Image (tube, rainbow, N blue to C red; front, side, top):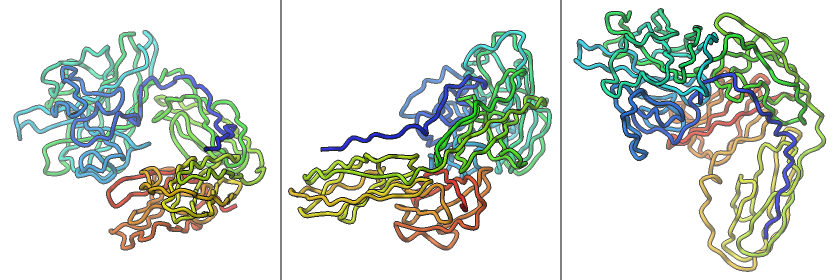
Length: 493
């Protein structure tokens, strides 16, 4: 017998938003699966190379190495498709977990073959004839590259750039509407490439690459290698007359999160968000998730090819009404379905202790006892307003075979959030914990063989009291390379 859960969804204030960025999957976050080898850009939804004659085979996912970019994602521990540690670079995506790796130039004097990658993405609709659009994307030179080059650009058409043969060759006949004439040699910071153009109404695809031949590509030598690789992220195509829009004011309960901004496709948009009165940005993109501890106003600034517009939004925070409450019922058999029935009040996490040494972080776990007897079971819920536990005695009248914990139950658990001074990390034996601020700067590292101290216990407490109040990203990397990223709010209140 299970007790059904009635969750308070008042905190999930998600509004339907207008589409401002016309690029599908602009930050390359959506994917079919994790990449595991070269040339798998088709794993990223709505992105591909320009050679459509390539037959897409799900078990292979490998394209033509002469024109297909790599798909890079943090979900992969592979040495050629993972990040930030990679056999060819050490770098994080500009935002999120996904990006592309592209060959923009290859020294044909070393090997008589062309190897140019072309990254082609879908737009939501055809562009409007006569309308001006601002195009923005970000690149960074891969650390192991032999050359830094110019003429990285974006070309718009109806898809006819697809050659179906010799796809790695330069395309001097296809002149990109937006192109950088500067040699980009920064291997640390993302460089913004931005420009505007007037659409003729036939454009439905964006293709990024170096379309110029060797004689018209300026380059500088940065190492002894023969290629020039760049990482690409955060692509946007926005009507030049669009203005910043922070969305309507929102009211939430203390401890809740809410989205602000009006573009549900807002990843990678040329926008920065600020807390009103502060000058340091807290996030980027057209739509962000915030969790203020009290009523807060935010400002968004959008830069469209030199024209900057601003808008503000206020998130009203209602006071705490008390800690969340947990409750559950004894079913009597050896296999018990524990279903949380308490109030959520924007619960961050739930932890069950079954009284036999086993535990779970699932909301509604099923547990099998291996022996008859009486057990004290406790469910603890954590939220901004505090934590609360409910304990009950359960009687097991028949024996069962205890199953192994599911992968979900063994995932690292990071709690609470907001955190007042310490973070609890469960299921993290042998892992490494890294903490980054909202701008991607690493502020804390704990565990990992290279820093001299490994997490040897399944439960750890990490002191973060020295960190400033704000939102942080906690990354837990297991010994096998599996990663979990959790957003945590730190407050000294």
